[in-house]
Length: 502
Image (cartoon, rainbow, N blue to C red; front, side, top):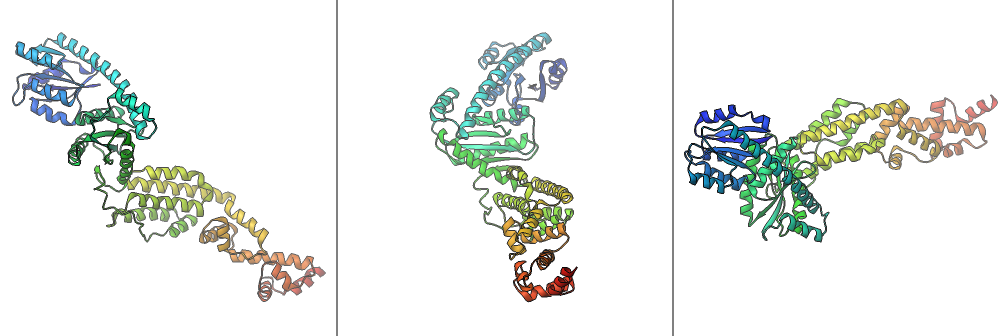
C-alpha cells in the first residue's frame, strides 16, 4: 500500500476526495489530511507519504511552496495539484516542480483515477528499481562494517553507490527497536531517516537500522541526533534505543565506529527509558565487580534440594536488587553475573547439560532488558530441574563415576574435598548429591565400604588385623579396631575366628 495525504483548506473537498476514490482498489491508503501547507508539513514530520494531493491557494503556505519543501525532505514523493484557477504561471511552476498532473476543480473523476493509476505505476517502478539498488548497496555497506570487503572492491562500490562524504567526519548510528515491527514499517522508518539526514541508512539481518552520519563537528552531530530521537519518539510506540559510534575520518574506518555503537548498545539492558546511548551518557556506569548478598551456594542448594520456588525467587530477587541499586552497574558485569550462574550450575549441579550452555550464554549476551534476562535464567533453571528429575530415575552419572572411583581407590586417603577436585564439582554439592543417590553420608559410606573390604581380607588372608586396617584405608590401627567393633559388634580377630570356623 502506498501512503496518500490530502491538503485543502475546504473540508468538504477533502471529505469528497476520500469518498470519491476507492483508494484501496489502487493500492493506496489515505493516512491523513491538512487544511494548509504549514499544517501538512508539521504532520508529515513523523510519517512518510508516497502521493500528495494538494490545492494551490491556501492560507499560511500555498500548495506549490509545500511541494517545493517536501521535494527536499521526501524526494520520492509524487504530487498531484488540484486548483480552482487555470493560470498558466501556476501550471508552469507546478510542472517545473515535477508534479504528476494539474487538475481543475471540480475534479473530473475519470481524469483523477487515470492520474492515480499512472502515479502508482511510477511508484511501483521506482520502488522496484530502488529496492534492487538498495539491496546491493546495503550488502556492500554491511560487508564494510564487518570488515568483509577488500579495499579495491570497496573503492569501486563507493563510486558506484556514491558513498563519498566530502571529507567530513563520520559516525555509525545503530537504531534498535525492542518489539518486532512489520518489515514494511521498518522500511518506511528507514526512508524517513534517510530523508531527514540525507544520508545512507541500511537494515541489517537482525532488522536493526544502521545510519551513516556525516558531520562537520560534534555540535552538528548532536543536533542531528536530537532530531533523530524526536523522529523515533513520534514514529515508534514501543521501546527503542539509538547507539552512537565514535567519529572516524574515512569510510575505511566505519567498522570502528560500528563496533563502538554495538558496544554502547549493550547498555539497553540497564536503561529503563528509550533514547540515545552515547559515550557521555554511560560514563556513570561502573565496570567494577559488585558484591551481592545472594550467594550462588544458596541457589545450588535449592536446586539440589528440588526447591523450585525458592530457586526462582532467588533469581528474581537477586536481579531486582541489582536493578534498584544506587550503584549503576555496567551491563557487561550484569551479564557476566548471569553467565556465572549458568556455568556454575552446569559444572556443580548438572554437568551433563553442557550442550545447552552455548545457547543460553548467547541469549544472555543478546538480551536487551533485565526482565528478559530474568526470564532466560528461570527457563534455564526449569530445564535443570527437569534434567535432574530424569537423572534421579536412572541415577546420577556423576555419582556413578564417583562411586566407581571410590571402589577402586578406597585404600587411599579420600574425602569430599579431594573428590571434588578430581571430578570438578563443588564439595558441598557433591556431598548432597552423594547422600541423595546412595542414602548415606559420605563418611558413613566410606566406613561401611572399608569394613566390608577388611572382612574380605580377614577371611581370605592371614594378615594381622592392624595391617588389614591400613590396607583398607585406616591410617590409625586403633581407630580401625574401634570402628570395626562399633559397627560389627566384635573385634576383627573375633570376627575372623567366627567366620573361618563357620
